[in-house]
Length: 276
Ligand code: SG7
Ligand code: ZN
Image 1 (tube, rainbow, N blue to C red):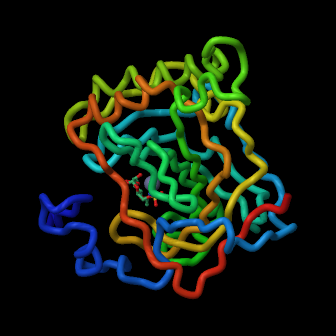
Image 2 (tube, helix red, strand yellow):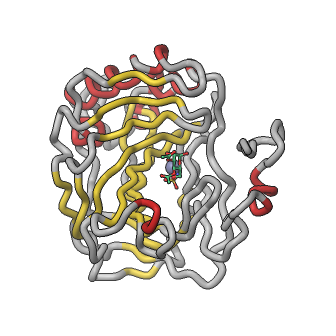
């Protein structure tokens, strides 16, 4: 059975009905995304730095797929890994994907205080010692790294931006990587379209110079059905800066937009932050 869920009310299961999908955990007490209220986060000195293995591999991306809910870059198996960052296990990276909005500034899933960013990238990894099937049944089975994406235009010309007269703050390799990635979107316009990824870009190229030491941490869920409460979430504080015309290619080239779940209640959860 193809149970039809979506992010608006133009399908059988809009977000408020996700809890009634078969096998759904979407009505649970530890759901994602959430609003991170900076006044309420608890600083935790045990939140140390990550080890990102093979994030510099320019051949790690195997394919790019339009799932109908997101654009997903699938990685070659057993290549990229994430450890450290107080995770307690080694995690194998499976894929990364995007959440975006329409023409507005909305698009990210997590919010910081009242701010929503235009996009969010999720790098999804599973515990190396478990199958994916087992990992989604256990609280720390998956580790998702979330980075906000902000438009370079936002900071152009501001007091702390680099250069004179609005030079882009993107390095050439980052800009080049985002240009190459977004060039695939026109080839995967229809749902289930898939392209082999042949360009040489690494995850490091896409992340660029963003600070990878300062982040928020909490226990939550997958943000799509069946919303398993199996995710150790890391949301990095500093956004990646990408040119606005490239951000806009997601809603423009794909046939859908506003692919982000409404924020969920914290209930009794604590949100931690790396300490200053
Ligand atoms: C996207 O978000 C896809 C899903 C992902 C889901 O719809 O990337 O992945 C696949 C393989 O379709 O679900 C199990 C999984 O990774 C939820 O991921 S998220 O919580 O990081 N947004
Ligand atoms: Zn996601």
